[in-house]
Image (tube, rainbow, N blue to C red):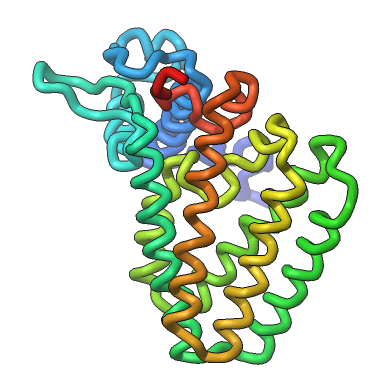
Length: 262
């Protein structure tokens, strides 16, 4: 038919320039975060934009955006002379991050207990506990069991955080957990190297049960205290992992932690 363009003549769909820029910024952020967490960029090292451009293959604009985002996450910090440096963390920094997470998660479960949760939410929590029970009671000889525990544990923590019904609290917890070693499962794989995995996971699971029971009983203060105590288990795990270089190698972001001499 006259005037009808053939398929071959149809113009190619072009992604908007801003979308391409955002994609490059995300790519730069993910690549740079991996270099930092793996220790390929040493803690305290100044980050040269040109060197990063050459290393990860993007232009300077997305690299600058990535550095700004990573500074908000706390993985890099601005330096007085300009630019950014890879941040180093002391053991006390890690403990403070864990304590802050526990405080915020404690607030979340107290709100959940005081406001009440639905029958569906209660069943979801009980199902998660049952699945975690299976992992903890089963064989822990290989990485598969620990990886399953990490996934279920992360799901449990997300669920109890969401039960507060407060996006404000959720957002602050997300900000704290942007530091990988502050997350609930940061030291689980390290535990596999210490020979105390069964005892530690059993204790953590007992605490999970106690927190859920307090929420269901509408005992806000008890739920909050239990949740804060649960978070402090991570500080104990840090102390255990710090005794072994092999164990610390299993901690996400462990390369950024400057350990005290044993």
